[in-house]
Amino acid sequence: MRIKDQIDEIGKQAKKASAAMALASTAEKNTALHEIVQLIRTHKAQIQQANQADLNKANQNGLEPALLDRLSLSDKTIETMAIGLEQMTQLPDPIGEISDLKIRPSGIQVGKMRVPLGVIGIIYESRPNVTIDAAGLCIKSGNATILRGGSEAFECNQVLAQLVSQGLTRANLPAHAVQVIKTTDRDAVGHLITAKTYVDVIVPRGGKSLIQRIAEQATVPVIKHLDGICHTYIDAHANIEQAIQIADNAKTHRYGTCNTMETLLIHQAVAQKVLSKLVPLYLAKHVELRGCPATCALVQHAKPATEQDWFTEYLAPILSIRIVDSLEQAIQHINHYGSQHTDVIVTEHHSHAMQFIRQVDSASVMINASSRFADGFEYGLGAEIGISTDKLHARGPVGLEGLTSQKYVIFGHGEIRT
Image (tube, rainbow, N blue to C red; front, side, top):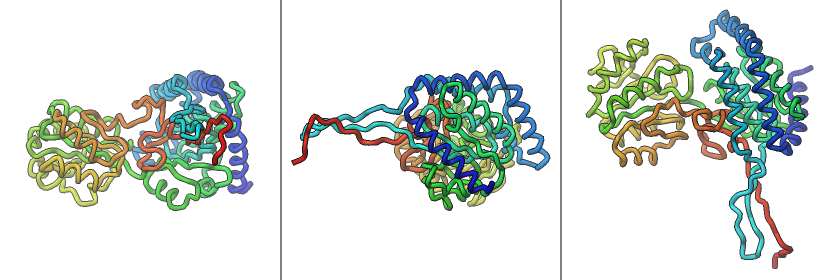
């Protein structure tokens, strides 16, 4: 069967399933999630076996360390997937919720009802846990989804898809509500992002080149972010010990994630004190430091940063450091070089903190916390389908509400317009 015909068939099945999912009760959807949790835990060995097969192939193909890290599923990662689904069962079901009811002078009541988006196409690389996160969120929000994982996670994604289908069937919901495309052919992506007849929205998760391609070529609406150029600004009024812990964690907790800090900004008043304590931590973890002239003057190990460095999402043990003269200069740097993902201020000065969160134009803005918290699981969303740096429809970690829309509902009592 041609790739286009495969996508069309999957699309038809998803469209049919989405109609049933939109009508599914909260109990039915939660039952499906509980069944999938049980299947994940019961079949952990099978999941890990498939994951190891993917890792072996990825190593043979010379996949980069950051991507290998994303691909790997530990016992903890698998249990986190299960816990994420359990959290979703505890979240309020947004579907059917009516809000903003107002009585108009005519006597009619006007409100808004939450409804599913329909069929969501999700395209992602490496991380097989996305298969479970995305499936769970789409099930709970009453949507159907078509998943196209990366070729490097093909074996594991197929196993996870089978478990999800079994869970849906056990809950008497359509198995085709979650489908994983069973080909690694790149043409499948092109057909999926232009399948307007069947797909209502596309969510890409992956490298900048993938997301750029989808944003340029898709005829289906896209929820996206291109880069995770996250900043931490250490203010003149920062608690230094707290700042050291935050800046260390934001960079070195994991290198290959979109909420990892890529640029550290430090006020000149505390730069020497901060760097004298922070640099040894980075060097012990083999983090390459690139800095502005003022940074290089204080840190002999730092290489001069280029203009391109400030625009770069490294996804690697590399960090750019700039010493700034003021809070205003830090904000200007972030808004110019940043990607509107996640940015942090470390300060004990309330007015500076408020100015920072008002003026930094990013999807997540934090005070005295690591940027690594920019995550649907950490925000209490159960999981996330992605992080959006767009400003329309959804912004930041996209959880249940981000996968819904609203329609106006009107309650009348026989009123007519005159």
